[in-house]
Structures are given as structure tokens and as C-alpha cells.
Image 1 (cartoon, helix red, strand yellow):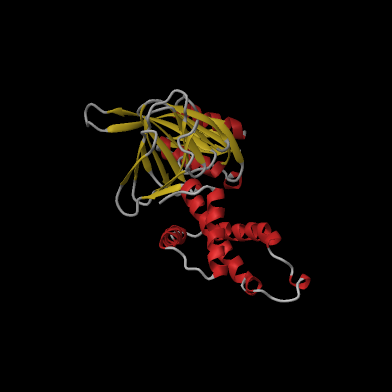
Image 2 (cartoon, rainbow, N blue to C red; image 1 turned 45 degrees about the vertical axis):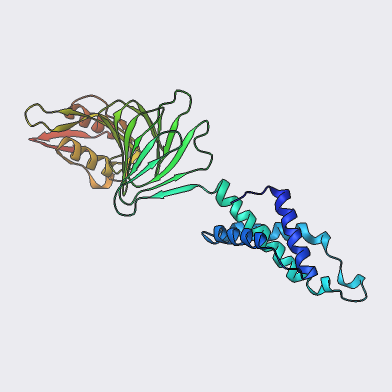
Length: 315
């Protein structure tokens, strides 16, 4: 379909207005253009955009109409003034909606059932897993390549030393220059698995984490929490086993900290229940299980006892 700039659209609208006033027939070409506009406009009408267009067009048309009280009789034009105005508003609105959908509305890709592969303009390839949704602005790629993701997806990002690629997910972002990684979102649990290259993962309330290949960033399902895992191949079983490299909490309730520690260290920790909502900020990077739990007891001002694989924290 031929695209019109503003002046051409205005000329076309007033030509139709002339046809309406003179009762001449609209040409087949004009009907064809109107039909195409209608098809494009009705695909996904944006009510907010339509309302803004109506207000803007009405304000711009005020000086075209002669006030009724200033004339002594009603002409054919006056009898049809509202009809003409409606035609103009409709055409400008359809033209505006068409322009919005063509040049401004983001592209949205969804994986309804199976996986869906999306090829981006910069050469990057995104594999959306079932239920995922990717939103890409019309300005993509631009100086900074930014996309929004709901659900899980595997990214193979085209390399660029000057144009970062950023994936905005639910509560966290992943920034790369060119790499292969996977973003996972399951309820409160968020994760980024890195296969090639380097990535920087940022989340509210915690420091930026930098991953190397075969490492994973996750919040373990707890807000303001960061864990980095590495995966090494077990020569005997041939399976990958995760190893906890770092674990950080920033203003996290003690009861959630305990749950994370128990899950990652395969141990049991007893503590005074009245202290469960106390907020903890701690970095357990490095150190053994004993050292890290002792550090937690020191932060709380508690004494610590150990019975087999059970730790008991007391005031």
C-alpha cells in the first residue's frame, strides 16, 4: 500500500470532502485506499489513541466552519457540516491509527503452544519457550538493543562491541554484547543460564552479577537475593552438578534466609520463631557451611550449637 505523509493525507481528505459537498462520486482508486486504511485500522484499534486523535482533529478543524448565528440561511454545506466533520475525523483517525501501527506500535511475538523462533533485525535469534512473549520496539536495534520478555526464552545474540543487548524480564535485566544464554521465570523464581560469552545480570536491591560460561544466576525464588552457581561435569555419572559460588541477601527476612540456606546446604537450622521477620543483609561468598552459618549467628547475635547435621541458633 502507498504511504502518505501528512500533507498528502490532508489533500486526499479534502478531495473527499469536495466530492461529498458536490455529490460527485468517489473514484475507485479512492475507494481502494479507504478500504485498505479500514483493514489496517480494524486489526487492533487502540481506544486511547483514537480518542486523542478525535480531540486533536476537532481542535484543528474549528476554523473551517462558519458559526451558525452569523448567517441568515442554511446552505447545503451547513446542512452537512457534522457529516463532513465525521468523515474528516474518521479519515484522519484511520490514517493516524495506520501510522501508529506501522511506525510506532511494538512487535509482539508469542509462543502459544510449542517453541517459537524469532529472528531479530540485528541477526540475533530468540527461541521462545511455550507461554513466552517477546516485545520488540520499532526502534530496534538502535544504539542499545532492548527487548522485553515474559516467560522463558533462549537468546543467541549477534555480537556487537558498541551496541549492548538488554533483556528486561520481570524484576531483573540481563545485559550482553553477544552471547548465548537462557532467561527463566517461574513464579517468584528467576534465573539466567550462560552458555557462551559473558552477561551482567541486575536485579532490584542487589549488586550486579557477572556470569561466565556454565554459570547460572538465580534469586532462588526470594526477592533481593542473588546466588551464582557453576556447573561441572561429573566424570563418573556424566551429569552436571551445581556448585554454589556465592550467595547474597539484602534486607531479607530471616525465615526466608534460613529456607534458602537449608535448601542449598542440605542441612537443618533451628532458630527462635519470633526472629523470623528480622531483616538480614549478608554475603556468604566463599566459606564452608559451618563458617557461613556461624557468620549468620554472629550477625544475629545468637549462640550456635550443632548436633549431627542440625544447627541450633539461640539468643
